[in-house]
Length: 306
Image (cartoon, rainbow, N blue to C red; front, side, top):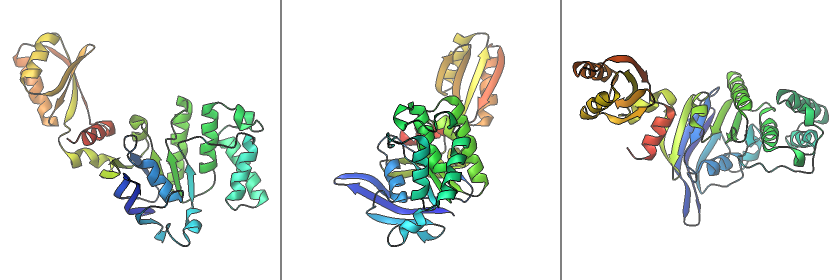
């Protein structure tokens, strides 16, 4: 494991932000940390990068502790992009990236080269010498992510990186994150855009009120929580009759969607039984599509306590 969080806890007065949280991230993989607002994601990230001191627990990077003496040296292996865009507005993009490189311990020549790499990789050339105060929100977001991703690090942590970006840059960031993982780095991403997140992560930790409800591979989520079933979409000649048959069969979440009827079947084997019941009732079935349960399905089921 590259990064390991063990029994992490943090309170703010009477508010429990993180409660005995544990998860790990494999080397060369992308891990999602997801949960509703106030679930403890940002507190967890701040604990990892040293912006918050947790009440208890351990955080290890390559078996070296991040908390306590010497932690600052280990944290130098982490690139971090926070959710909130708080940049020195009086600096130009080039000056800000250079400043961050020097603060990272790079010498002048290496810092200048890193800045040029960031400008090229994130297509910042047209406003590289523009003050940050004059940039759009999306441009500021790209600058914020660039300072975290361009240096070579063991771990990259990005809090809501997709928010504020246009679709082109959402795709581009996904590509950059995957390339980082392919070169052996570990990546942790938090996002409310679960469908976007699912396309890039290998594993996930779902938290609520600072407690981990699930942590593991995305592919294992549905089998671990159980009962999600299979979503089907059926095109028929008589929607009214088909709707009655499906409702009488005890299926869940039966609803009309355009020219189709969608429902949740308990298993893949149950799809054949549903079609057979429709045919026996005199309904002509034109098409049946099945959709495997998604990260969003699992997330919503866990949060609802089902």
